[in-house]
Length: 357
Image (tube, rainbow, N blue to C red; front, side, top):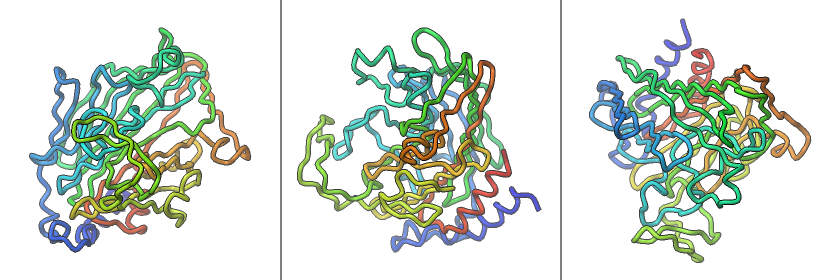
């Protein structure tokens, strides 16, 4: 029995369990979950995006507007209609954090590529830092298609800085609808256009910036957007709607997961009446597997295979190098769940993922 079939059978058993909350929204029967509407992928060139629909509902969009410094997936929506991704800075909504404007949706980039920072670059980058900041420019949608089992987008991008292309990138996205579990597989192949050093840094690599509700509760002062979308510093924090928590494959919880290795990481919490879980899985063939995690309580949820010197406090070093013309591949799977998902179910989907690509 192949890994794809095995994973599918496990998901059939799982449909009834991913949604154990007390609200009626999370009490969807297995028979309802088995009805899977069609998947549609629509390439909207004039709007600089490719939309992915599960039935008539938008799941996510691959977007590449001129005002962001890398393409990303935004928004990302659960089966119950909850946007798990922060809206800021693309939309200004009262009560959201107004920090790190380079954190948008789901993305992949890195903070030190031959000294160039792709991670931290945004419209807010100071002028004196712009010569040392890179832009990932969308080049072409190679494929935008769907069948009964999944939607697929293939794109090409260039990592550009100081008037040259450092890296050419091919990205494959695969989107699967399993009822309460929605799956995103992101496979990126980076090909060096010059000799490349990915210098160890914590600033990377594959990440999601989640909504306020999925942050971990904290009493630290923070900057939120007010009713008019303007930044406002708050010293007394209201955590009533904040319920996020982390759990790693190694059993580590909360903010202690930062700087630890794990095969996967789960962020879970409650958004209004809906229990939500977001899981990122590392691929067994990725460099540095199992990766270190750059997962923060304020809403940044990231996995970084390349920052070993920082995370190990100098005990390990990767400093990944590519000669001109050489390639490296990174693959990550994300599970977007309405309801919770067990460790066993995550492990099965991780094994399936590493067997597919």
